[in-house]
Structures are given as C-alpha cells and as structure tokens.
Amino acid sequence: MSDGKIIAAAQEERFTRKKHDAGFPTQAIRYCLAEAGLAFNAIDQVVFYDKPLVKFERLLETYIATTPRGFPSFFAAMPIW
Image (tube, rainbow, N blue to C red; front, top):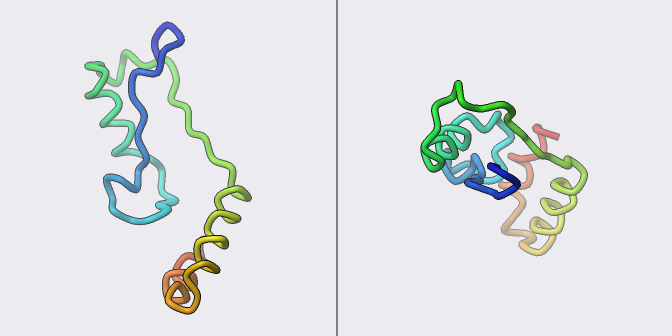
C-alpha cells in the first residue's frame, strides 16, 4: 500500500504452484516489490494475513465436494494442519 492504495498483492501459491502453500510468501513479496518498483530497504512493513480456521473450512468444503476424487490431495494437505 502507498497512501492508502493497494499497489500490489499476490498469493505465494501462484509462484510455487503448490495449492494452499503454507510457506512464508517470499516470492510473493519479491513480486510486489518489483510491481511497485521498490527496493526492500524502502519497505516499512510487510503484512501477512492468514485465518487458519477459515482456510481449513474452505479446504474441507473443496474436498467434500470432490469426494472420492479429492481424497489423495486431502490426505496430502492434512499433515499441515
């Protein structure tokens, strides 16, 4: 954000190609810096938003909707939780 306006936003999974990537969004931060034309030392704050229970509910809804096809990806995602 700059002067209250969103300059750039990105989800890490778009770069890693891992659905629901739980890792720290390093590549997303790099993208946002490049998109805004900023160097890292020009940043005051990095904001990382996550609501785990909302994400978990969304995962469950997705996997229930794709049962039984969704079981393999469901079981792969569960160790994270």
